Amino acid sequence: ILQAMAFLLQGAGCEVVAARSAEAAQQALAAATRAPDAIVCDYQLHGRWDGDVVIAQLREEFNAEVPALLVTGNTAGGAAEAAARSLG
Image 1 (cartoon, rainbow, N blue to C red):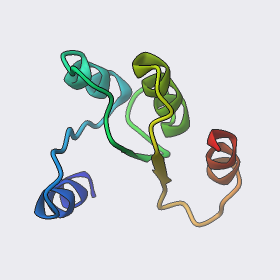
Image 2: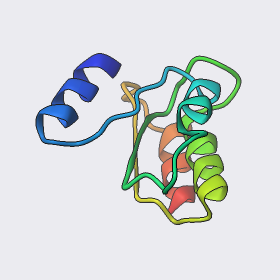
Image 3: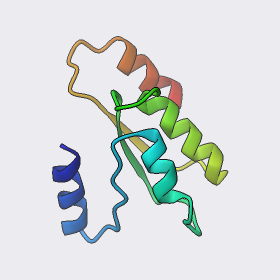
Image 4: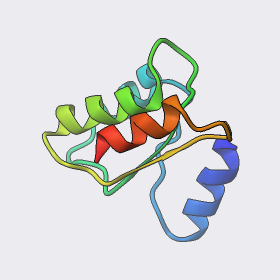
């Protein structure tokens, strides 16, 4: 799904930074000179944090309320839905 989303966004003319974990995203964005225009993040990531935490960390790091889309393949709702609502 990561590769497919990156391909789709690149096809639409977006510059994409794709990462499988919070750590990888933070490393990839460490040299960025500006905040991302948007964040698309899976709720269940590899690593120790879920997507909602990663979105909050990136917003804090860039000191910007970056628009974000939290996605999940989990159809049960619950924790993922609550996390998305907490992000605003």
